[in-house]
Image (tube, rainbow, N blue to C red; front, top):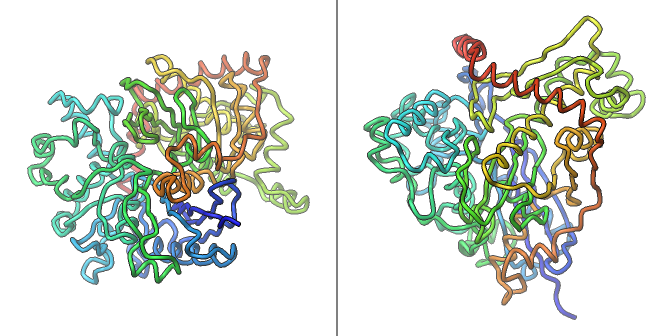
Length: 553
């Protein structure tokens, strides 16, 4: 009897990490183990230090990444009773841009006693938004210099990305910047620890580091125009840029021992978590929009052509799948908005009812909200609770409710928030199509797809069918697919992603069709949503003023 072969997908999220063991031939999940980060998202104060963090800081502890890695892998292997020789490859996906300053040997600066109490020495999580002034200046200088790379990012760059965060580090904490021999994505740092090979994944470098396959990184001259001491930024990113799914190296002796695996086990080049989820949902062809819907939503779309779409987060050749141009767009908060509302705006009697009926508060609010029709509440919201990522690329914008009265109910407000995020997605779809990148169909995955009301609202507002991915762990599954390609067909894996996905990705089991009557009402509301959006992003700068006051306080 032929020995079963498996790949392992390592998924490093915002709050936790997970390991997914997948049968390469059938796609059957042998085991999934997750573990929360001990320090979670560090946004109030550093561990063991009482001094509050500055506004808009969101950090992580790199030790959490390694601790969860070791725990989840060992437990997954043990629970599945899989022998080391059965594992043919390991794939890694990671949040981005999550950047880590380190010494030349890879030691994170935050682990040095001298720098432990300095916030800029710690990894800055993707949702760290303190670099908005630097991002704004980078755009302005690039426009003045007519930098050719700017068009690859729709004319704007984000405060979430590596260069903006690094520039803020230089200007706010020059001693940390100067001490950093290397500044790299968390994904590449973890892969470096496992293999001893320092390289940069094309997904992270392309979408978050301003790298282009043919043009490379922005010039030293541009960087020096921002700050003369910033000209050496990309010298702090040594190593090749490699596409996701390529073999990075083999598991080194130390980590083979720590994980209970064979030295030399194939490690694939990492990928960003949302982009990995695209593959985990079986999307490997052009024209299919994939949405990974969770705390935020990322919209991934591939094309056979490179088109410069204003307002997108980037177009990267081979960024998701070899031979295709991958486009990224997104909403900086979706599930986070619903979480905020539940935590701060729902009365206690609703909580008691949910508990008595053994429902989550989200399920209760969705049930109550489903009893009303589109527009019935008279409420409309802007979904900018964590800024606008696409198409405005501005972290200083904020959320808005309009139409509230003394009779407005929690479930009506909850529904309006869901609708606002669906309006945001429609705006993104239209941004693509108006500028020449077709969206032929839509596939969704992530935690929010379990909410039927939410998915139906998205179908109604966009007027499109939504197919729901059957895998609950699409990011980790995508990493496992990439591992199977990195291992290669000669080792029991696959020669390309299309073959891997055909065998390893489960078929979709649910679709949502748009209600044409609801669509008519939502068309009216959507037009008002766009008017509000344009007004508060172009004509009225009160959100900027309020953001400034919030930061000063």
